[in-house]
Length: 282
Length: 326
Image: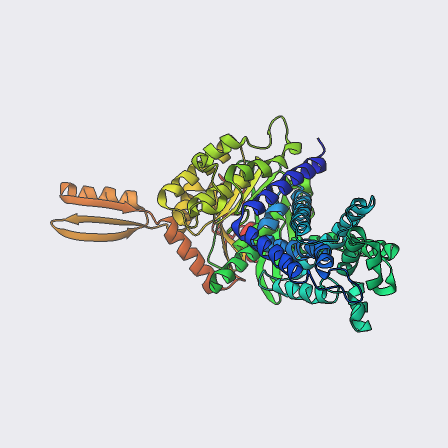
């Protein structure tokens, strides 16, 4: 029996268990409902507003674009927050004290977070599809395109969440990631096209994976004519693939290093010290 | 036979403060060692170095023949760890968590040591059978601690480290825990190193007690050896004709014999008390603190592995004692 294989399998079931826990945890469910509800509200209020320069409803564009935000929120914010939380309460140290436990832990996180992303995307899309019109899901290439953007979007975001999780000291500071993600959403064309933003902001937005995730989703689920409201007037498939792949490679190189670094520093006294600090706060 | 734990001249320095200034001890298979010492003496640091969770500044450390700083996962599988405070896996169910963590140990199973420990058997052993289906966060403090112990031993460790395992236990839970430790050492032949503040607990559990103070081991021996070396005098109390007497006797047996020869049946309420471990501990630690970290004396010749070491015939300090104080 190969120990790594055993740990990998244990990691898969760990991911499934964690996913089930999230789905049965009131706090996590409320967060999901509030977030998705917010997205749907943004859709409904812009249902009758046209995308600037077109007569296509903005709400439909928003529905497709927030799917990218689902990936960003769970892949980066949620991943980082869970990692910091697991470090705080000793879960990470427990993994370290178990043979090949870190491998199982990491696989478990990847499975549970990916599962969350897929669930969020599917739920948002299913509910949203009833509320808006004009989705171009009838084309033969729609679903495969959505699939490849999603598949590439996971390695482009999850490792980034791991890296941030390794950098932030405690769960109180991970709120900063939330703020940063909100700011990034504003310049990533989620709620309106970025073509009307100053060029500098466009460039900053285009440097991060969120814009490209959104662009990929829109290319999959919106009519081709909508490419006109993107910079360059095209879906830029090659660039989408290139940028997402670059983030994925960078993340996959950096994440194991950072995770190993943060795990190496863990010890019982550190967990105890954080516990005392946490108790002082409450 | 090779020692399971072998620590020599372990040093740990933070900034400019020496927390550990030359700690040394060994432990054989199946031995239960209790590490005592005042707060901040470096007990947790010592145990974390042995667990492989902390890099030492200098010295030789070997656990199961491996340097913990370079221990691989196969080595890790033979080690059990129970830390001071865990709050992890709060949403998991007790049984589910034990079964999950046990899986990682299966590839390291040997005919002599089947790994992991059967979950139902383990739940029974630590007394959590009734809580098997509960979520971890709903456990009481003592139950949570017993779960920590269960997780620590789910891989049937050959060496088990426990840092203050019974903090917050009620007397009954404490007694059950002591039984568990005895069983592990006797039946599983696990080598156990634990820290505690409770001297009664140390006396009850330890084959050998190590007292850590001022950055070194100032005493190493069984509870009885420690109290005997420290207290050559015993306290004799008696009453005669309604009057109470107390006498500190070098040789209590001879003194009492004389007492009866002189006064016969008029002696009442006779009590002879040898110094307790607590008194021995207090005196040792106080002496160590007063004399400073550089001139410590080993009260028992540091020859662990042979507890029945013959006493040194000469009045010269033993070489091992000099080493400790050097």
